[in-house]
Image 1: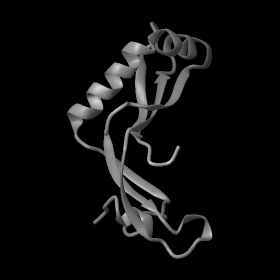
Image 2 (image 1 turned 90 degrees about the vertical axis):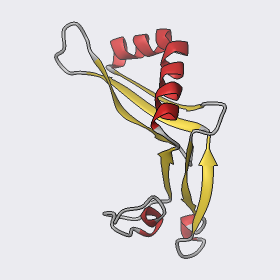
Image 3 (image 1 turned 60 degrees about the vertical axis):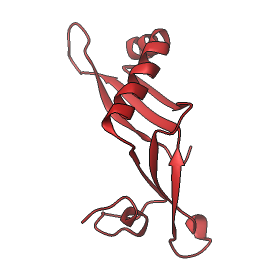
Length: 115
C-alpha cells in the first residue's frame, strides 16, 4: 500500500523521494488553483500562447497541503520522515496539442514541500 510517508522510504513506490505531499482536500485544491488562475490570467495566457505551457510555484497564503520531508536528505543520514504542512503550490498548465481553438489542461498541481 502506498502512503505519502512511505514514499520517503520508497515503500511501495518505484523509488524513494525527499518530499511527499498531498492536498488537504478537493475544495482547497479547486479554490487555490482557481484563485491563482483568476489573479494571473494575463501572464498565464501569454505563456500559453508563446510557450504552450505555464509553470509556477507560488505561496497560496494559507495552509493547502500536508506531507513528509526526508530529514536525512543530502546524505545527512538514513531516510527519516518528518511531518510538514505547506502553503506552496507547484502548478503546470499546458495547451492540448492540435486543439483549435486552443484548449488548456492542468498537467500537474500539488503542494510543494520543497521549493
